[in-house]
Image (tube, rainbow, N blue to C red; front, side, top):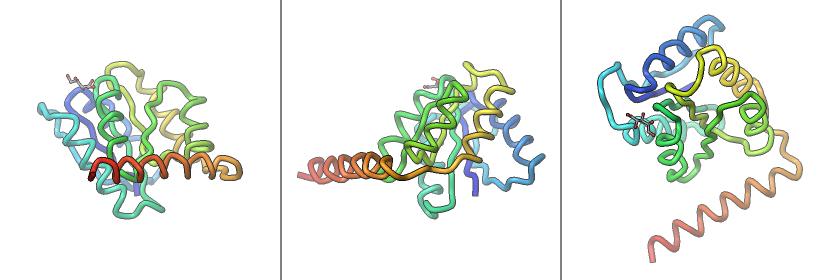
Length: 152
Ligand code: RB5
């Protein structure tokens, strides 16, 4: 399932991407906003928590003005590998190499067509594993170490 959310600055792009997901019969859950002003960390957290309920099949899409605020927030959550994308190559290779489970987009920085092409390729591309497994495992190990150190 696709979990999508935005703040007010990403609202128009969220609505555009939802229409495209509907066109290709891709189901999604919309975590808001409804266009009114909200704080991007709240939306980012809400999308990521839902993604992690079924991490093997769910993927998240989060949009704010630049995509930066939501990506910073998302990457604080254990188990999230959020990729801020502004080009097609990055959108494709962050799935292949990083196994990203959340894509972050800028509603005020991207054209609609460009944003949709990036989301489309990101959704269609699989993680290739191999040598990249060990690298992603290292990210997870750092994340776990950080959690333990923060508790001390
Ligand atoms: C909201 O004005 C804006 O700060 C937010 O959408 C985002 O760009 C933050 O990174």
